[in-house]
Image (cartoon, rainbow, N blue to C red; front, side, top):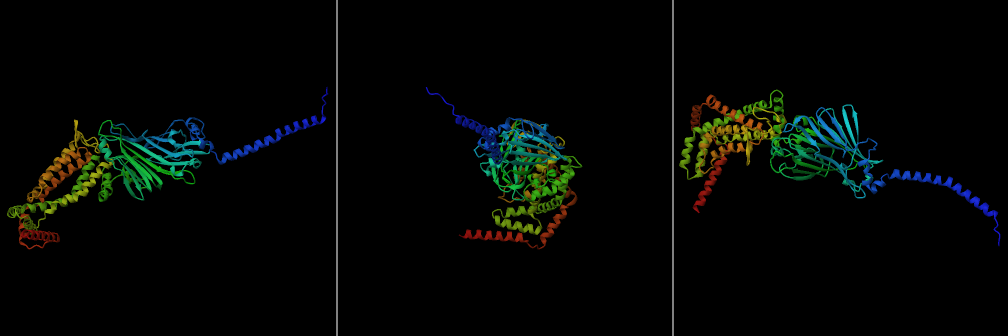
Length: 603
């Protein structure tokens, strides 16, 4: 048997191997780990969102569930801040402005008035590199309250990772209805699939605030300013949508209240939508319209940095005119000259009156002043009617004499008018001159905020219809109630029409439409139209026609002497009178028509 020998060199080599192993383990490995750690930290710093890019939804569970946050620990929590005029309530779910309650106002039921009460959404949408569609309203934000002087701020922050976040900042002043709304991001660009796909979505279901939902809906509309000072709006009667570039602000009008989002810089390619939310007039209607806008958010230095202002309050010209960016243009004053009459005459004048008188008395005083200003026109009209009355027998003779020759009858009638110094067109002048005033007031009363909720006599609210009886059924175009002021206005219109048309209707030519019937039909039409309109307008029209009747009676019995006018007409008939340009033109046209008629007769 062979003996095992111990090789001394093997033992030495084995010991050296063990020593080398211990040296490598204790010195080389720690250095490698330290180097790897430094390298990993550098990689993490450069691309901090590899995990987020791999699965945004997993990492976003931090925002959905965790209470650990650099700013604060808040899950679906309300934050209430109020100033002198408004109570704002924010919620950490989506970082939204969830509730806006206006102090000192109530709705048609006498309850607290909310513009926002879980009926509004503002969220940012974008798509990540891995294809996830992200909606910020799905996540919980943390919040921080900051107070700097008279400004209180709420900062809502959605933390995506240590180096990525989106924040909404709301700044509330000590008083007023305009707040600052800023959106900022950090590290967001590395997540985006496409920088052009970031949008701010703003939607609102407009609360019903008035007694007549149909009337309120008529004056509730989405309006926006673009390309400088131009404005446009979506239909208030039907569902509609639109898109526009260079938009300065967007208004979600709710008749007497408004939500206006004002941009620091114009934004292109904004899409708008307006939808009616009720089918028929009803007592259970809660919302009138749904407004929505899709607002693209461009990146600045690879981040979102948008500054906006947000007005949420009364649609009152006296309030809106105190803010910048001409947001008072969200009020529809009327088209062209009618809007100018309202903005520069009726609004300042009525605003002055309501400082010293009740709203009802202010309407009456404004009516009196308007009628006095128009009284010279009424005077000239009545003088013309008196002259027409004097020559009425002669006109009747001409009608009978030339009843079979319309052209000759018209020629002789024009000659008689010229000799007598009468002008039948003056009967149309009052209507023509009153049209701008009438239409301006037609636009004024529905938007006069000072009338809202103000009572007068039996009318509970001058901005809405008055009611003396409720009907158990609804009459088409009339409604389910009876209003007294429209009835009084229609009666006054009837008597005014009867007085003013006496002379004019007697000169109606054969073959002409029955103008007497048409003018008497007007009071009936007004009765139906005014029954659902602002009672202040019916009050104005009732007082206006009563004053006009009194002015006409005063002119007839105390100013104009009809016997004197009769003598003056007879003297005018004896004098040769030159035809004016209009009369000459009419004479030439009639002569040409007569010549053509004779030529055709010969053929």
